[in-house]
Amino acid sequence: MKAHPIDLEQLNRQLRSLITLAPNDAPIVSCYLSCSAEREPATELFERRAATLQVLAAKEADALDEALDWIRSYLATRLEPSTRGVAMFARGGSEPIFVPMQFQVPVPDHVSANAMPDVYHLVELKDTYHRYVVLIVSEQSARIIEVNLGAVTRDAWSKYPALRERVRDEWAHEHYQNHRRHRGQRFLEEKLRLLDKLTAAGGHTHLILAGDPDLTAQVRAALPPHLQDKLIDILPLSATASTEDVVGATLASFIEEEHRESSDAVTQLVAGLWRGGLVVAGTQRTIDALGRGRADVLILASEYPSKPAWSCPACDWIDTLPGPPGVCSVCASTVLQCADRKELIVQLAERRGVEVEIVQGSEALLRVGGVGCLLRYALDEWDPTSGPEVDVRPQREP
Image (cartoon, rainbow, N blue to C red):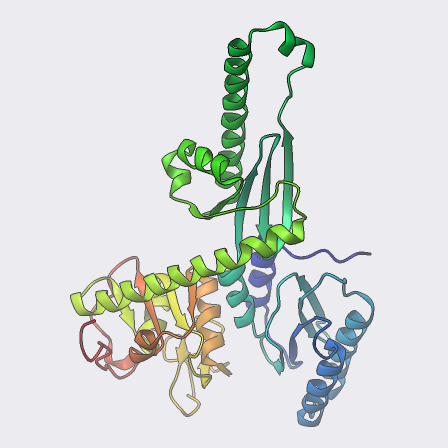
């Protein structure tokens, strides 16, 4: 059976199932591999990482070997030629799971085995590539393409209805030209209505126009204000371009716009810290805002350091102190898990339905701790028992 590239809705469903898995004694192998002809085969890279995991395994050896075998089999038999990145999550033992996903965009190479799946790179993928719509126009046709996680998931063509030669010959030139313009205007209005329905139904927030510059200028002028707000770029592109060429020509513009939006979020965060706005920054305050349902947007530096932390599956409490706590300070549970704090923060955000902005190369964000939140509601007075209160404002106002 052919494995199709995953789309955003499927990714969100898989993320939800992964972050709500109940842990047991068997480890979950999280495997991300890039696939391309220019680099070493994914199977070879995986085997090197798997060998390291097997050396570290002890009592979980049988369950780990079972999970690794499923991944080996999938890599050997199920990868599609167009796949540029694959993510797999496998657990053997008494409660087995295997969740594979193929993407038409690359993923970072990462293989690990922990009590819970490592989903950070899925969240990063979703933030960077999610989805957008391209409207390509020519004199003869209009084409609406949906790009979803780097793959084309919709490609709708509409041909412009040509007038018959005998009708044109029987009409006066002026009458013919007026009728032609009228039909062209109706055709454009019809495509804009379809575009409007598609963007509304799919929750798309980004639009790219492509085609002849004169035509795209006309289309831009005809866009209603709410679609004008979604427009991020206008590109010269043939209406007959292949789907691969459409993605290649438009994806860079989309990613650049995503980087601008991430930078704007950091600017809003830093300004809010100076002005006492609805923002928090720093690890413990961010965890507090997420855990108490106050956060609207999580802003996380991709360079945020990986350090161990402790979490309580029963109530989502996270402790970042160096040593393991005896019990959860919120619900007194003694069932605690050690995991990477970066993973725990993005998983908590996903469980709370909080938008995640992952930011690359932002010194301003790193200066305030590498992580923060834009808030829905103000936090209550800071609780000293949740961690030390520190001044996370920038050293000087930008």
